[in-house]
Image (tube, rainbow, N blue to C red):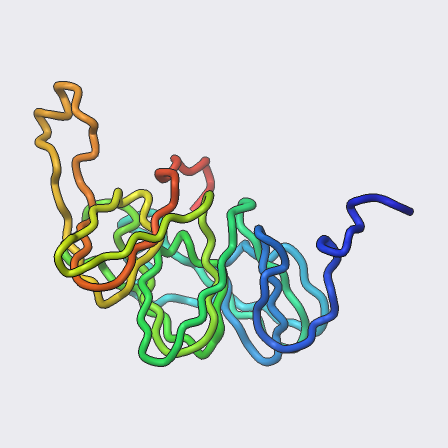
Length: 225
């Protein structure tokens, strides 16, 4: 049987080392030798001797999902084998987190990660209990993290003399050492009179970077969480 479908870039190759690699722009292959973590529902295929278990987030995680409707339900994958992960054909990127690094990522943009990374749900400082998506995942330690993004991301440097303002629905992640707060750019009256409606942005200050996706959050379909 012959087809462009069977071209080498589409064929899954035998694993050469444990851990994650990009299968292609839209999916990640993880060669499991022990344990790893991924968002529930993101696994699209697997082979080998693997077991799967829902991973709880504790009281904070449950509260987060109840308040914002967003959350990052995780599963642990254990054993020896290979698993492939993707989410709604979004673009995939692998981040190498080194000792001393700290990266904040919106839960909706996390695909899978190494067990050597520490993961903690944080409330964005200054955001209080308002605005979905302002509870984020803080990754520290060392290891690899697969991040997904709808479209090609924009990475904006943040410098001490110039803060960056980002739509809260478009932010993917940022250097955890940055200071964050909510910034109101327009009054409610201005919005009623035909203003842009971009009333609240996340303001980031300090030295680092922020990752933004080129689209705002679209309403979830019924049954999606």
